[in-house]
Amino acid sequence: MYDHWDLTPFYTGIDDAKFASDFARLKELASGIGELAKTCGKIADKELLCRYIALNEECEQKIILLFGYLELRSAVNAKDTEALSYIGRIRAILADCAGAGAVLRNYIGRIDDIKALIGDDKVLTEYAFLFDNIKSDFAHLLSGEEETIMSKYNISGGSAWETMRDDLTASVKVQYNGGVTNLSDIRNKAYEDSAEVRKSAYEAELACYPQIEDAIAYSLNNIKKQATTEAELRHFESPIVKELHYARMQKATLDALLTAMVEYMPHFRRYLKALARALGHKNGLPWYDLFAPVGNDDATYSPEDARNYLAKVFTPFDADLANMVDKAFADNWIDFYPADGKQGGAFCMSCHPLKQSRVLTNFGGKFGDVMTLAHELGHAFHNFNLYSHRPLNTDYSMPVAETASNFNEVLTMDYALSHAETKEQKIALLNGKLSDTTQIICDIYSRYLFEKSVFDACKDDFMTADKLSEMMLAAQKQAYGDGLDPEYMHKYMWICKGHYYSPDLSFYNWPYAFGGLFAQGLFAKYKEMGAEFVPLYKKLLHATTVCSVEDTAKIAGIDLTNPDFWRQGLDYFVGLIDEFEELTK
Image (cartoon, rainbow, N blue to C red; front, side):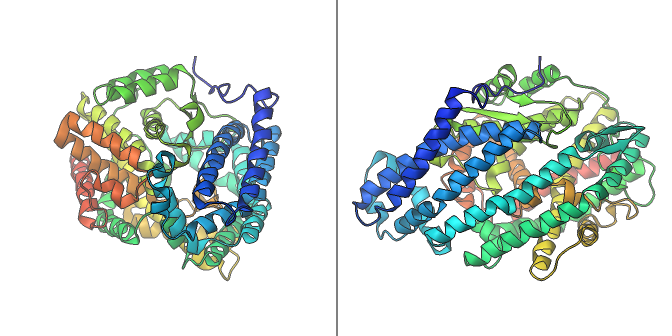
């Protein structure tokens, strides 16, 4: 019953008349934005604002449908040349109107008293946060001609390098056990019960990367150089300052988060050493056993089993969440299994015009795969709470992007721990929870350190594949410390993590730590308030697209710039680590 997602609500194919109509309309809208830019200063400012919103709302809806459909097709088939061709054509259309968009935002950014101009206009008042952001972004906009040039060069620059990396990692052949498999499948074996399988899969994975490492090193170097150049042109001190600005988050919040993470890292190294001892290792935990199961949780799950399990978790919390998850399964929003040419990992994509999401996983039937579904369906629930917004008010920023996904994980794990029937099952569940949390603390910190070092180096140097591997190992040693066996680390993590390769978004690592610890704090509120928390939670999710990160948190009475908030969440995990150590002695 469950296997591939259903994309027919988007289009039945590229030969669908609706696809052709929407594609033609997108070109008209892009032309309309260009024509509107020519009217700046020639028509009344309020009329310009109204026409700007109307054009961009419809344009956004068409982009989400067209681009979303094509991206979803290419995500499960890296060789879908038809989809890739249209992705390039859409990018070219958007590049052509990038300059006009910049002209319009520049003009709007110079309007003195925009609040008075908006007055009580129903549509414009809903976009007050959008207009505030346009004004705050004004200092970082280029001229219309420069924005057009930047956008067009990106098609054959950063975006092309990103596509090449995605294609290489999706199609690379992995020699394993006398046969050939793909990267997604071989990485899934890190969760296998057999220590021999985990180690041999790790060795096969590392052995496949030299086939593609040089090409992907070029990709990473050029993407990061492009991101650095853009930050400089837009008058940001660095790419991280640029990302914080567009994330609508204060640096004090990031500093508070990182401060608390570093303080508590020795506890997570303590967990890694306890796991190593439980598995019979004496020199720290080898990388291939980072996700090794301990205790006794040999249950396997079909997609139907996962559906039933998540219904038990979410129904007591909120009917809207439970019903949406049921609809995701019933209406085939989910593409489940690994396949050649399919993108690794998991993601959720929202489609505001359809009031639906789509979820990609590489489902392996373990409890961790159920948790992955819970995580991605959390994104879908976040999207669900935004569908009452107008079309241009549906994008949440990096830090809060992982709020609902992690909150779903916390709910699911709390349910699992409370229903553990034996000591061995409790060990297995604690290990799963701590393993995941160690990823968002130690591993995420290593990724942050690595990306920072790459940005620091790319200004003057070209980093070869060997140099990038050295930098990755250095970051891992700093973050994991003596928790890992130094003889068995993963120098190629810079290849298999796609977050490094976005030309438009840098440092997509620390938001996972933010989301995990923020969700833990929200869960504490839920335990304290009970059912009264649920409408507050939905209000918070709804606010993520129209408030700064700090103002969003204030809805739940949280000060994100205070390290003590983050320490509270980390204290919870110290207790779990103590319990894990005791149970595994």
